[in-house]
Length: 230
Figure 1 (cartoon, rainbow, N blue to C red):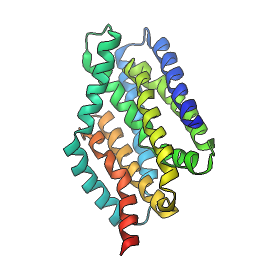
Figure 2 (figure 1 turned 45 degrees about the vertical axis):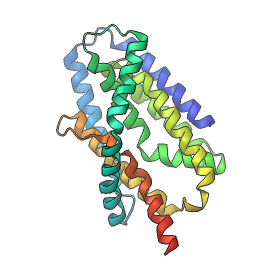
Figure 3 (figure 1 turned 30 degrees about the vertical axis):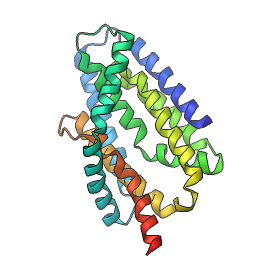
């Protein structure tokens, strides 16, 4: 869990720095910063999505994952979670959607990437935290930019990262036999598609409920399990 703890602290520290620098930044500058970050997120997603050669598994995982996530209303619950924090800390803001937007967007960007998946699995399987340490640096820098443009909600995404990556790390110990390189590559590709969707949303090209697609990341594990049975 050491890598996840360091990652969480980096997000909190970066967010605090971003909030400090956000004072006095005009809204038009914040918007162009978000557009630049959105383009970068799309590029990262494309690179990750091309990792796996088994497109059928990736496509089916996204389709069935979308059905599961929509049924569970994951994104709605993430927004409610963000609204809960907002009420508890009594944010002085005229736009309540801003806090939830920052929380949900940052949580998804930090959680669904390949480094979150691979790093957490490495941490649980081998005790190697180097990938998560590298991710902590990247997330720390990104959180500075996010927090300066989207506000305090970004800092609380550290909680989502801690829970998500912590669960992945713990689960990896029990799923060791199924986490073969092929499966990890498929999970990474699905995560890359979700990252692309986040970037497109940030650019206001689409309004995809990316949170509802999160189950898709883990469906390649199910495919590998059932393939082994037959």
